[in-house]
Length: 114
Image 1 (cartoon, rainbow, N blue to C red):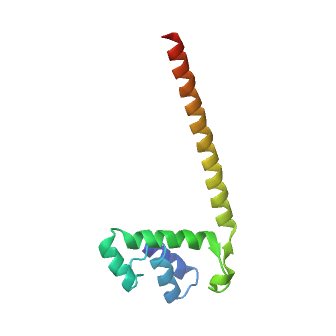
Image 2 (spheres, rainbow, N blue to C red):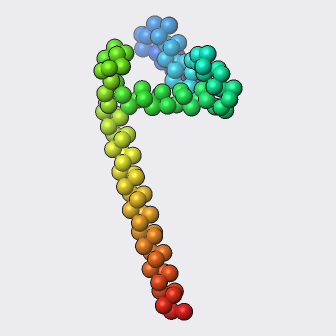
Image 3 (spheres, rainbow, N blue to C red):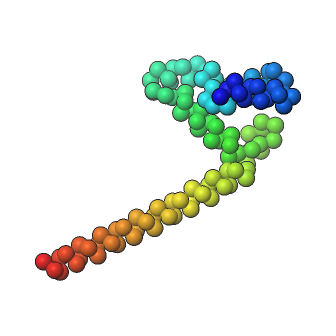
């Protein structure tokens, strides 16, 4: 997959350095870890992958001006992700409530019929 991303970037006029960076970061880049990451990885299995996954979610949902953390804000993709998550949670809550009420109805009908 990384090779195809690299080739596509080169074919679209991206320079070699940027194409390499794109290809390395298309999925989890295991070369990105500092001293703390190496130490934490020894204590917590898959620490590096977990951190990169969380960072990728943040990169997808947030945007900022030229890397300035003070200017970060929720972008369009982030708004869609949060809206979908809230809606999914609401549907799950309704399904759980319906299931619980059905169980109560069954239990009361079994108790009265016995």
